[in-house]
Length: 123
Image 1 (cartoon, rainbow, N blue to C red):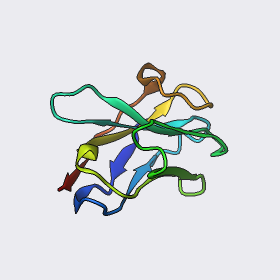
Image 2: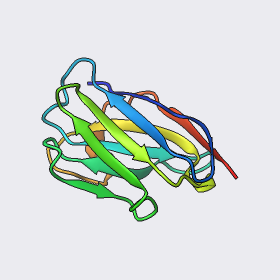
Image 3: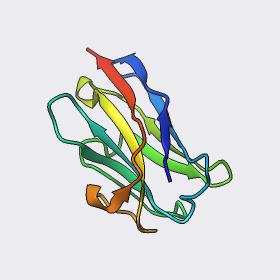
């Protein structure tokens, strides 16, 4: 399983972006999917996760209320809607499929990391 993240770009503070995570081989439909990010010089950190059914979600405190994760099972795609972006949201964003069906914020629970997408928020 390898998921491909896309949709990043350069935006200004307060703007919005929607990231997409596509599973072209349709092998993660029974797994939770998570979004993580890594800023230069920092460790990869949890952002958001959604269960296999889409019925449960979880967010890091830093993005709660601003970001929304969702999934379209018919399109095998998970989205991350990012609103009210801040400079501190600048990072490479990655998505990955969990080994489990339920949500998890633990990086070690995730597998098959794909290439990320750069999000840069200017002040």
